[in-house]
Length: 409
Ligand SMILES: [Zn+2]
Image (cartoon, rainbow, N blue to C red; front, side, top):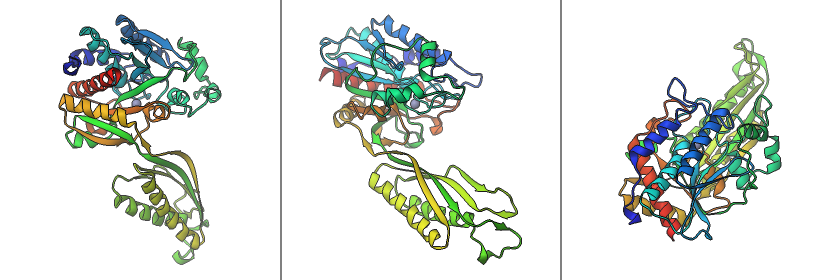
């Protein structure tokens, strides 16, 4: 009986649209940054919808919300589904909220059909995923997963100096439950892809098997400042020239390496004057690959290119300010998603997440997998972020079938 069960597409879509009014902007986007009054209102609406289904809503000390639909054996750990309700200041209607409201739609479909799974089901809203008002990103799922500590959380502040805990109290979402105390049998997160791969391949559902390894770096190259008009080319130590050779070597390697992601997002020279050869150039190096071993090869390519420039007399330093290891999600959870896709008959493909998500932290403490839906043009963190009702429905159906499979096992 459960295997034939499907979500209600229209109800899911109208809930997404109703929720999108909270923090909605004139250009069709959403501004619902973490722990603002809009975030509070978005939480209130979600909690009210859960209580309508007889669910119990608990809140932990960092405002993570856990809405639980009882199973037939509540001595067993819950199967959890969720994501985040906060947005970027110029965010869209689906990043995060889709995963939470699809979880709600799963419970609504079960409730309508009078079905209880063996294990309870819990829908989670993780606090402050976006990292736009409060740094870091994936903040409260990070504390839940022992990536950050409560002591660190006490020190988080926004640009106005308002503390995270203070803001949490202000919107009435500082709960009693210690963060990380509540355990789950499994966690499933449905999210928009935030990239163009599914759409380009005409695929409705992505089975996300893990997250790629990442390395974020600041690099500085120091040469010698000199006059642009009087210094012959062969007598210069120009850090821009060194930079172009290093960048060219890295681009060549990245272009020839399948699934590599290589980005120089910031370049600055000092001094910045058209008539002066700068003495210093700083740039960022963002390197990603599904395999840590291949990421190491990309870094080695950079290092070899930097060494060639050092031999010419440049001083070059690289500081890694962020890194994330290669992650593989839980085999049992991935299999549940694969089986759900097959049951529903959707065209699907397997991929790794290119971006960070709450699931990327939660997988450290709980068996986890993710489901992606396509998004138009791969656009996210933008008012133009767009998916179709059919895409939302497909993702939610896979979430439903995977969660029921895990919860009845
Ligand atoms: Zn998100």
